[in-house]
Length: 84
Image (cartoon, rainbow, N blue to C red):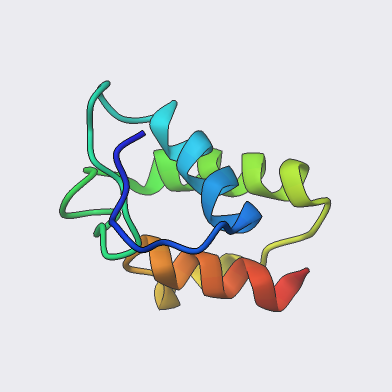
């Protein structure tokens, strides 16, 4: 995992990165400012797979409308933390 420098030791962030790494080519850099669509080419199908994995990982239900508020990894971390 190649992540932005100065990241907190954050379980939510690291769990998200682990899930995203399964969906993107190896050696892809993933940090807080990584754009899910632009940098990682996450489409709607992959987004649904990621949400399902996050729901399992954190034992939460993520409303589908959350996707409209998520552009970067940091946005996703923030949304997950609000639901935990």
